[in-house]
Image 1 (cartoon, helix red, strand yellow):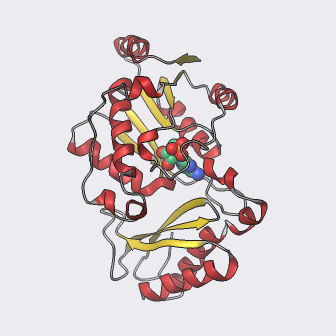
Image 2 (cartoon, protein in one colour):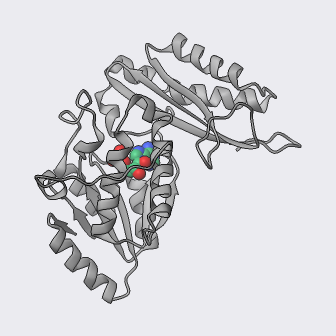
Length: 289
Ligand code: AMP
């Protein structure tokens, strides 16, 4: 495994791999790696000859009041995990390399960046799109691996890749959860003991919504209210949003459709948690995935 810090060195290795017709898979992360990241790396390893992992806590996607300074950084542990997963290259750029003095260029994926998480995190997805565009230009992968955990991010990046003609295929990997259902996240370590006990309420309320829909409930307002009251009753969390959206466009839905996504964000103490579920209704038996 090579740890590379400069774009020039990275490109040399990538160009050599391309000359050897190697298939290149890429997993961009902000580090503090966990089993969610690991599942992306495993899939990437299975499907490619060269596995590139990037670790960069991207300042451009944090608002000034957010947790950029506190964001967990654990280089040694990350390197060990990457080694275990047979990563070929860790790309570790510095802030100065990615955003040198006088930096002026940004990527905005319009309108959909302002929905869901974008409402309470203005500018966040502009930061995400910009860094991933830059990383794609440095790594030139054949396949980019993203997690369904950050469903809006994945959707926005897919749109950017299509709109700007990046020659890369995107694969979205399922959400990896703790045993109690909490979606794994580097930010879970901010949770106090009490908050950690309450945190599975996001997944539980999604499951409860799914059960109700399975039992025939079709009113989205009723479902959102039920989820909201569960969150209030069983946690100290402050609801940011619960939205039922079209998984293909992220457009908010007024009515249930065959396949849809319920996404939510809850602030538990200082930690903002997100989760989502895709529900598919089969008209006859109302079977739900
Ligand atoms: P992050 O380091 O949080 O920016 O995440 C890097 C990548 O890992 C993103 O594509 C995330 O969606 C993905 N990821 C993070 N947590 C999970 C999880 N629990 N399950 C699956 N993918 C995840």
